[in-house]
Image (cartoon, rainbow, N blue to C red; front, side):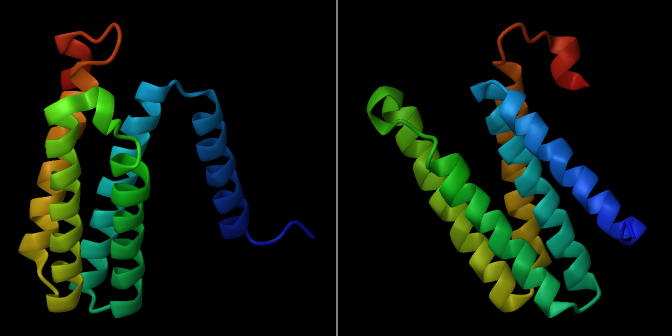
Length: 138
């Protein structure tokens, strides 16, 4: 009557994400994009270890989608100046590395992009309105 518990859990998670997105300020939305990309890379890495080519490809594609159509698209190249231009180039580089990781089953390439995203996420969290050193470390 109500579907499987897995479907209910998925529906609940989707509602949670949608609610988070609809109530988040622009700064929080970027953090959510970083988190989604990092999670997708973890999914791809786990699939790579299991030789699950389909899941790996889907997870890498999702990561690329987040990087290009989320993070890169959010840049304002006019207002952001050199920093925005450099971030744009870095996002392009990440995309190339993700494509390489997918094509060559390269865990080091995945780990490299994950590390870059984690560093950027940490920096972004550090400039949040009202951020403190203790909050960023947590």
